[in-house]
Length: 312
Image (cartoon, rainbow, N blue to C red):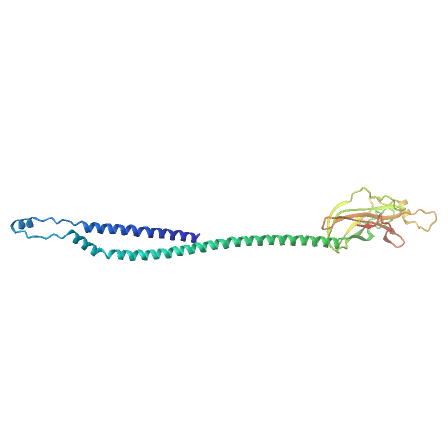
């Protein structure tokens, strides 16, 4: 913008410098011509008029007009040379100013071309950077998905045991485990043994007492408790199990009867259920479990049945 204003100022200066001296010279020449051809007449006073009346008039020889004009042009012939010198100097200055203005205009045009080229290059560079950023984001997303698929979370259940309930307020005995009047309460641990996060969505768990496991799983069509827990790799949480009603005497006896007795119809104590969870990709997975209480070992052992014990 500053360069453009400079060019405009130089152009105005050149225009005024070329027009003003010519008008000034023409006016000066006109004044000199008028002064040469017009001579003011001296008006005689009264004394001169009286002396002229008394004194004899001498013969006055008039100057010829050609001689007068020749004398005027001889006196003024040096003035055009001076005007010509000043005009030539002004023309030289004007030419140099015009050259300077042209050079500035060329420089301005070159700067404009360079600016637009640089702007175009920067736009291409920006597009390339955006493409590289998009490719990097895509590669990062692919790497994350690959990591989740190769190092997926794995939920397992372990360490089942009965909780020992103690009496308070003067109560000396409380039924535990598989005794009559017991609620068979206990707990187990849910652990993520995979390589990425596991988000627990649903848990179902129940105590099932029967001689054997049925063909249709007892929890078919049921919904579990909604959960929102995140297990990092290697971490775990606990979950409780138990009956809604205490054991009656007959059920307790059937659970505690010795299996070696002939014609005995013993029952088994199962803790079964399933856990639903998702990985970082949102894939829903499930782990089902079924543990039977072995009174001879006093431990919960997994059943050998893929319909009840499996993991997606």
